[in-house]
Length: 374
Image (cartoon, rainbow, N blue to C red; front, side):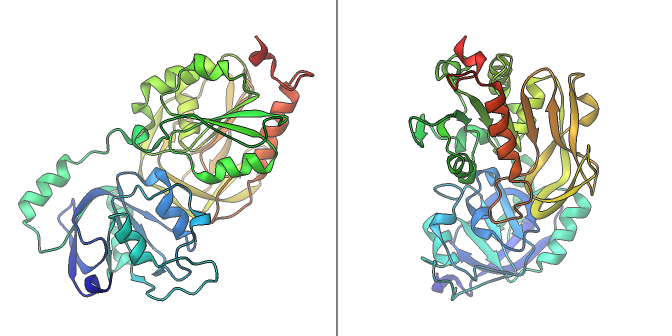
């Protein structure tokens, strides 16, 4: 809002560094886990991605907001991040689809922003020291009090805080394939990619039980993305294990990829600063082909812990971490990156077609999988 444009603000890092900037968006203080994204476009998707729950996001691209706010491109109904850090924000966006500006959007949703900060220097700190907590302050902080607060901050109940609370169905009732989308903080484009391929999508909340999902007689199961530490979702992991043992074709994305691996006995680990951006190269192990992918995660599956009846299908070209798994004893596969990404590269959208083919090959004449008919 205009009256906030020259108000000083401070970003305090857990390591004691302080960056002075100016406040925009909602004029309040906020504490969160400080992360950065290297995406050069797609700030609308970043702002509305539920996977940023509990985090203060740095945009490394210097100018943000130039094409305004376009609700049709949002990934959820509202932002879940704790704060937004940019070098410069555009006060007069230019786009025929724009329905507002960045500052007003943040103000409406009570998200504090800070700008006129050297985001390049800030990002280098996070890269060198790893993800850390930070606080946006509207006055010069009492450092001892703030550092104690940052030391104690934890992201808790992340998935439960972003998952839809009820079952919702979309798409034609007579569709060839009924897909249950298990919502752990699903980006809206996952549903859109399934609907585009003619599926009936039944979205269920994160706390759904295996019996409830099996009762829906799905042809396929989609495990969505979401925020937080995957290993904390102990009940969901138990329920996923029960469902996939019924041989229902399954596709996991991001957090869903991690939860499926945990359900099959693998382990996950926290990365130093994660992968967040639209330019992450991954290598397909069977062909050596490199795909450019969109990613947003702070944890990874530990390749060496994968079960015997599986293999790593994709690997991150930068740091060698696991980017995909295929299972040989059940009809299931998963990827760490976002094949539905928008904005972002569309290189890996074919994985949704692979999921359709997996359901088709597993289906009986009636269009239902053998497992769902049992």
